[in-house]
Image (cartoon, rainbow, N blue to C red; front, side, top):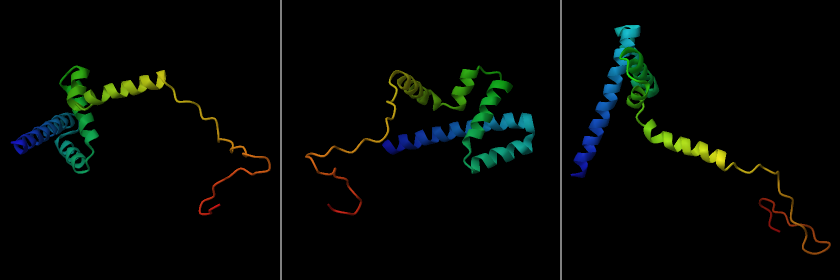
Length: 127
């Protein structure tokens, strides 16, 4: 039963990516022509340049089909919905809790008794 849900999930993911590539193809065909659109989508898919397809799908949904920007962004980059809260939390945490400034190298330890030199470690030398 688990392997069938896994196969179903992969099929849904693959069909979503195929639909996004089709939306990008429609938009590129409207702007550049059919031959160039097919060539760009094929090369982007072969070179695994998914950001090209995402950008083309976003611009197609936004400019050609007149979708609201947030809906076009959600369809073109759905992972952003999961990543954006973490990015915001990281930015807020850096403002609220800045890292301490670096003060430079630490001075060697003082000798334990008069006349003794401080111990230093040298790589490969036992002392």
